[in-house]
Length: 449
Ligand code: SF4
Figure 1: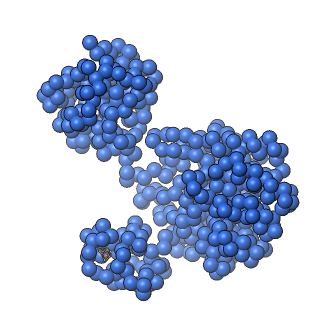
Figure 2 (figure 1 turned 45 degrees about the horizontal axis):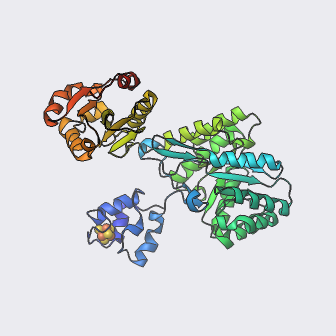
Figure 3 (figure 1 turned 90 degrees about the vertical axis):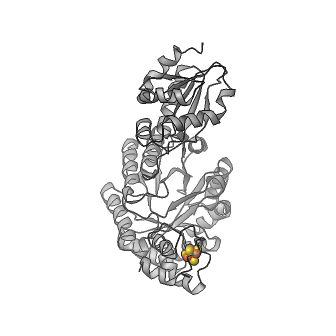
């Protein structure tokens, strides 16, 4: 049973020392109760209090780490049902399926494609997270060879898939040091699979045959002190999978039902032979609430739209996406190149820089810190106003890089040009286009003289 903020407060030292970066112990207790702080952030909690607070400090859905090194990824740890309540924490991890029934060429092509599936979008890096490697042959030696080979080709996290504990032992011999996600423990093999996972402290998928049996297997697994679980309800059609994913999330968050307090995995690749429908299923499961989605396709036509969906769902609605405030070189600008300025809202930066690139006019693009707001919003909020822009220009060093003194501001804030002229006495303020789409034409006609 989760403790309230006041219950937690009673167990804290009540010295208000501030070392947790909050002004009082009460503020810390409230944050801890809301899942916005971690118990370790208070260095003064007694061991007795720690034990009593363990329940309150634990997130309702465990965070599970899969893989290692640069390609390690985290899943779970979600705190809310709806993004607008706070934010979602760990983006859905996309996995691509390969198997030992595939030819060497097929495996190579899938691994290489999944490995290179990575995109920079609005300042974020999007990529496939894992390869699900399925044993269809039942041959432990063949499966081990495949895993060894795949492991040599990629640093992506791996998920060996077999229900045979002997085959899984061979898989762990091959890639156990890479912190793979083992798939899977069922009611029939839990004891043996659980022992394999426990020996190396590896994350393990537990699969049920519907929600009731999933709860049973999960409860038994936690009884074996397995803490890094991922839940597969075992459903393999849209209606049942969607219902199960929602029920698991609600059960964990609303009812604090411990057996469902783990991230989930969905297999659209096993629900249809139609790859386009599989893409649609994947999109639905990402929205509600699959933490890992396994697809058969590594190609960008399927992965990229899904990655964009994930990015849209998992960005923090309370935090505008922003890029660093500084001058960016678009192309290879020189002393006669145009100097433009705009706000640090990511979308603004990427649209404006994209249009400058398209113009093929090498330019200096100054990004002013406007707390991630777009041009008009930032102006209205007093974040993109003459004195702030002037200070940015005067401290940026751009005057040493160009021979001219012409500064292009967005057309939407034409009204500040007079005041900005007064602030930047050595500069001539030019009013650029209102719409980014007109930047190309504007720059092609721009002249430093
Ligand atoms: S660090 Fe601990 S004792 Fe200090 S204010 Fe925070 S909660 Fe209270």
